[in-house]
Length: 225
Image (cartoon, rainbow, N blue to C red; front, side, top):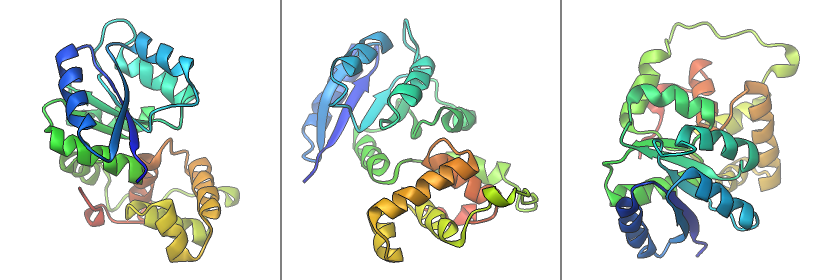
């Protein structure tokens, strides 16, 4: 079984220690390293760019380089890392921050270790995680009567791209999409890259929002963990 490589970054040493010990007991997870601040994290990533975490659990409020600034660097220099912000400053209104910075999830610090494991697995497999209250915000902010934007011909999604987008929103993996549409995994990844370019989305969560805004899917049909 391929393990999910995880890293933890938080200036609260006790939280880092307790979560690290808990996650190390899980067969499906390997804790690559822990850090207590953004500078230390970036030094570790520079030291071994060939061994990056699949999922990074990151605190928002830290001394030195704060979590918000770290996400900008990660998005630019380490786009393969799926970052989950775990913060005591969690607010539902931070959904916009999640989408703009390209993070894969935004969760409160009070979340249980058991649920954190499920979120890590969800992010690693699907590319994003929405809490139920975050989906409520999406439903509130996206009007069913909002007009669909007119796109240039070169920006219009093809039928195949729409099929792939719908399956992404159904939380299907690239492998599952390939099998369902009788495509190769490489072809599916190509369609995903085209979706990012045409929609301007920065991550999978952004594609989901685009699909809801353009009535390609209905928010009420979105599965929640």
